[in-house]
Image (cartoon, rainbow over all chains, first blue to last red; front, side):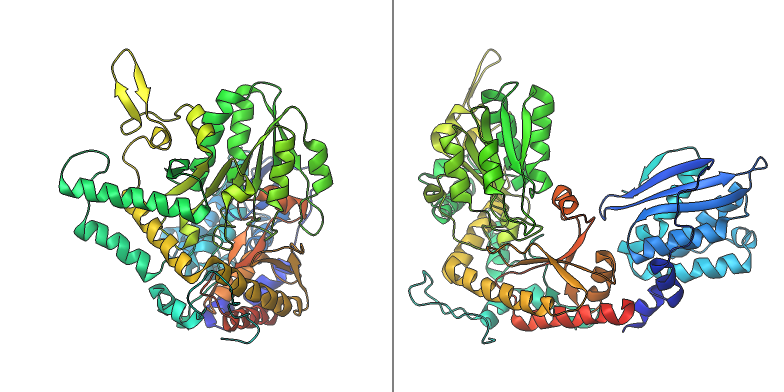
Amino acid sequence: MLDELRDLYQEVILDHGKNPRNFRRPDSFTKEAIGNNPMCGDALVIYLTLDGAGKITDVAFQGQGCAISVASASMMTEILTGRTAAEAENLFHVFHQLCTGEEPTADELSAVDEEALERLQMLSGVREFPMRVKCATLAWHTMDAAVKGEHEISTE
Amino acid sequence: MNASVPQMKAGSNSTLAFDVDRIRDDFPILKQQVYGKPLVYLDNGASAQKPRQVIDAMSDVYEKQYANIHRGVHYMSQHTTEAYEESRRKVQRFLGAASENEIVFTRSATEAINLVANSYGRTFLKAGDEIIVSHMEHHANIVPWQLLRDSIGIELKVAPILDDGSLDMAAYANLLGERTKIVAMTHISNALGTIVPIAEVIGMAHDAGAVVLVDGCQSVPHTAIDVRALDADFFVFAPHKVYGPTGIGVLYGKEDILNAMPPWQGGGDMIASVSFEKTTFQKAPLRFEAGTPSITEAIGLGAAVDYVTAIGMDAISAHEEGLLHYATERLSAIDGLRIIGTANDKAAIVSFVMDCAHPHDIGTIIDRAGVAVRTGHHCAEPVMKRFGLAATARASFGLYNTTAEVDALAEAIEGVKELFG
């Protein structure tokens, strides 16, 4: 098995792909958005619950997709819980850069704690697979849409 | 050649023995490596690779004999026009059409279907009329009819398919009626490989008084076509899937029907005379070829037709049937792999899913072994939904594929199981 494939499909990612966390539709939530990847047929719904202070108290998702898109969504739910919407947006920005092989600035990185960065970097193996970047970022684009009050996004 | 691939039978229309190694030598791209591995190209259903003969024919146009056609008295224009029209006659003979006037060059097969929907559909159909398509159509044979439906108020009926992916002929018969005006049906399903009994479909439609458009995109590369024997009213195909260039499509239409249809695009080349008061139009096919056409591509298509004709469509069919049987056998033996589309009558297209991995993950992993397959919904979402799937992986074979490449596919799939199993 090639190293690039092992980098992409790390144990943690395979685990999240097979056993996604927070894979549910909550009884109540504050915001939701649907994300579609029309070329793949992948579709996710992200459910966000925010408290009065703008902190994300719960993130959940449902849908179907490949191992990369499901693992990314699953890991995202864990990373974002307890953060503010502004922090979530910054994490998305950094993650997007990691996936496309760009370098986040020192300022952007300083706002990201080590644990979150480590988890984001696990998925950044997609930068070697340009056709799969959309799989890794679908959940994050959808979360971003939900935060901004948009109901549906398409990655095309 | 592997023994499980049938050799060309005596009495086939080919003059050459089917020698896959020699054929592979004609395709420069097959010598390429990807990720340091030999390219195993099994995405022919999406687009096929081009032989040297087609590449050279197209380079020759630009290097030796190029000008616009049907205009100008000069040497280059005259010779390019002759080459373009000779390609039309090659396609005519290839499809068994009665006249070269029945062959319209479009920009794509999709455009050919849109031409019929817009020109024939808007002229001869009215609100309340019905069009029948099958559940396994490519989006290109669904959406143009939906646009027509939404514009003029016709109804779109869907002929269902059975669990093995074959057309439900009884249900199709029940859909036919006096309101049926067009049956638009694929000859071979791009997603499943099912071969539709198209002659029977056409006969039943004609009995009901409907005209039939056959989507031959997947059949023309794999099997000999005789539009007169089929009695098709319209037949479209995509030259780039028959080892020819992109940028050109073919519409066959019966001459009397084409000449009863109005133009759908206006411009140069399609007119008889123009004044500001009144314009008169050419007869088919030029009536439907407004603007400068894909000249070089038409000539490349002629070379592709020459190429497959010299090998013989029957020999190509026999070779691909051997590959289909071998691939079906190899892939069926893999635990946790399920083939989607198991009709008795199939072309060399094998769609599959695996318990352990999503089709995109399969595609990415086997790509690193040099194996190119299509993953996704194959522009046929309704048939995917019919099987409760969002996507499959699809290996589609061409005349240059070998049983060793089937082995490479099967071994690459084992790599997927290694990672995900």
